[in-house]
Image 1 (cartoon, rainbow, N blue to C red):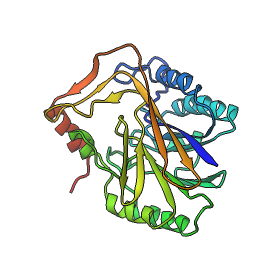
Image 2: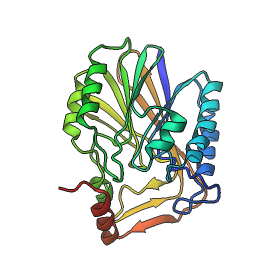
Image 3: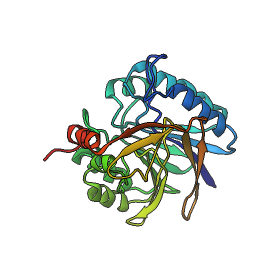
Image 4: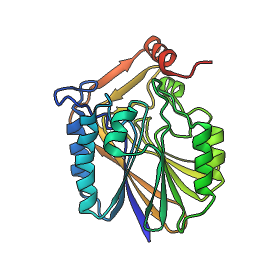
Length: 274
């Protein structure tokens, strides 16, 4: 058996149908992505790895649920949602349920982790969450575990995202490496990443809302129009295979280009403070 996962991230949906995120109609962007993803056969799990809403509105989470749940149901697939730094707990829990959780998909265990820190942009797993994670991983699943968490346990490329990384990544990786984890699925960076760390495959999906320029010069942070998603094939044994799919919008201008001063200001406001 191979579990095929449709991995979406950073939808940044808004409750107000007229609202835009950096000029992007995020609902339309998600619809374009799902139209493209409908061509993928054999999906068994749909993952949405955080920053599901930009404003935390109940209506935004309802938009997501009302699109992803029928899409998954038509394919006999399960769904897994996690919190990102832009998500708000009340709206998420009201519509999508508990923030940390476990589900079973055909012999694979899927663990969802909330790495969001209220009011901040960086991520963290707190001691009680790490203890819960270790307890879950103490008993192996038949085909191992898929972990979904918004903030990736691997370094970012850009200056701003480096300021908003997962804190205590070494402790998180130690907990993950102590079990039967087969792959870690994350978002937050708005561009594709596929790597190995401490023996674990880590796959970061591109953003649905926009695409970060990983090569922005001189401390800038900028993003272009366009969306993407990942398709991961996870066999019963062996390494996962990831395919990244781009979904263009036809626009080619930068949606934003923050200079180093603006990046520093955001990092100071939303990054960790000593």
